[in-house]
Image 1 (cartoon, one colour):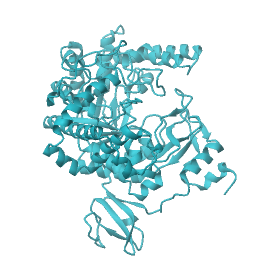
Image 2 (cartoon, rainbow, N blue to C red):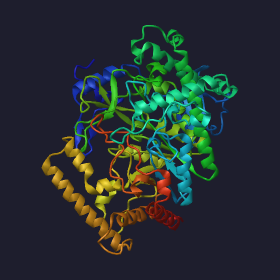
Image 3 (cartoon, rainbow, N blue to C red):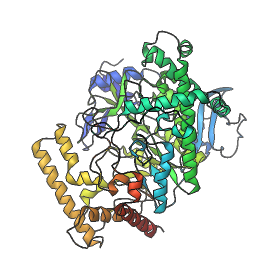
Image 4 (cartoon, rainbow, N blue to C red):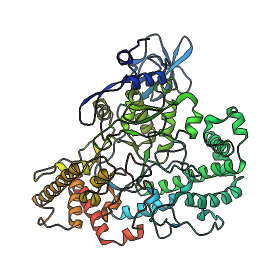
Length: 618
């Protein structure tokens, strides 16, 4: 083996050790990081034809001398294109790979759509008993319907650890193939009185542990009554993965969360499962699936869709990592290299999928993850879509700045996304924000996947002439769960946060605040120039209204407004790169849905968006 890992990587196509950072500066990974990542990858390489992509069934890429057995088990004919689906590549009678026969273009959306974004945990109605439920999404759909809105975007709705130690981030799920039982409406199922619902804590934030105890008490009562329900038994028979998941959670209750410390085999571990905990998670998963299905089906009758978000990773101690065995790589976490905001890099704490091992399964786990989400949505957002091309691996013991990029088979994973979207009739949106390799945007454009544009990224460049902030190949968002809402951004609260965390100094803060004030003046000038404002002396409401009008008038096929932007919320839902420093994933909306419905300002903003979307539709 070459003693210089910096040279060794040049012949290892799995690594990208030279890259352009967020400022466009060529950067080299350290020899120590390269060596550590190479060790973790090992020599476990998949054959070149472990996965073959056949766009629109084109057989050109099928290796000479290989045969194809179709999904239904019949041999493919020698002539013509392959049918769409996952087929088996065969040599000398033995399977050697997977053929992904996918439509060249994913389903496209109709133009002029708009909707709203709000995390489900932040949603409040006058009926909410401390945490919203799947059914209460219908209240928000109803408000959107009044104004012609047809898309409701929320954060991942996957199960998380709320039985201590707590990890309530929606991007750190126990599994990416099941739903969160905490959002089930147990009261509607006749749950026995579990005492008063937990109120918000002294800071007005969600008390996740208290909420979990309250809902779990309700769930256990319901689960005991429904354990022998024929519908549950039928669902369990059709979803064996959910049964194994429930037994896994039951085993964790006995053996401890970190399954790496279990001293017995997998079957023996499952045999130790606590029966009450097992029943809890099986019934909870079933009810979550049933109630979410009812909500999305009702929305669909009105031409509306719940847009679901697919988390990039899964909890290191979670079910997926345990269940999939060596598909995940231990001793390393996925993250992000330094950028102008997070100069210390980011370590997200979840293990990566080994790209070669995934290829040998025909990317089964990725398929199942997408298919799970697509059962209940017509618009799917892929978090951090750059992860289909490369992921920043941070070996254990290394700082987040000292990682290395590992390449993933972008075309193959894109083909899986296109095929699953086609089978579900759904639109796919990729979160291509930040440092995006050019091949990712090119692949998305070639195959009809929408990107994302965020208003806050474009506002500083506005001038008095025409602006292009929401192009036709992007879903436009006013702000995201990782940014400050519009009102807080205008005040420069994001800049002050960076100073508070020590990411910038006093001089840099002052310069950035001056730049923000200058951007404000340019935006106001643009609104006056376009006739969206009568004069330069705008109230906050008038400023927001003019900006929303401009974005809604752009050619973007889908516009998503952060619901909290309509009433001037200033605080963010999440500050990336922080944990205990900020109250991430705990802040509820200051308005109930009834309060939004009765607010003439919110109605006026929504009406203005609706009018502009109709006006810009061809």
